[in-house]
Length: 195
Image 1 (cartoon, rainbow, N blue to C red):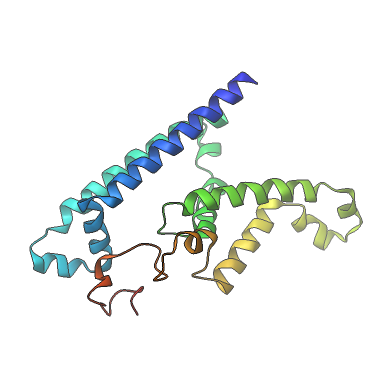
Image 2: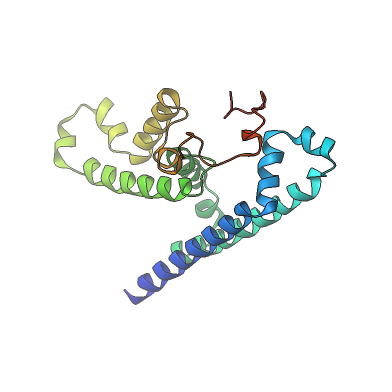
């Protein structure tokens, strides 16, 4: 029990540290250049800012955060077996968390992870109920698998609400944008947010 509690505190501490790093980087001048690189890399090049260095910094920072997350994940699951750690289930779970929470927002992955874990545990409980045994096998087998149901929810979410997510509506400002971005003042036609 105490080991589980310690792992919880380690994971929570990592979440706080990772969030602070992301917040500090995105609110700095470098973070604004990251947004500018995303929106219009050619414009930066014309202005004399070399995007290569900023891309390199973004990859280094994100890889350090991902490495820390991987270390915490291995501590939580208790093994480093490639078939468990690098399975497609883990990769798809992370993708579903980001899409459910909203890509491009700081809280998106956190909210998506909370929603995903809640749905997974709830669907596990629902799939184990005795009422499922009375269903025909064609329905019982897929509905008893929470990963199948989460995948179906993911596909429906992407298909019917491609831009909507709990985190993007939570983090949206008065302009409707998840956060201010580089081309907000110039109304660039290349920007998907300004069109």
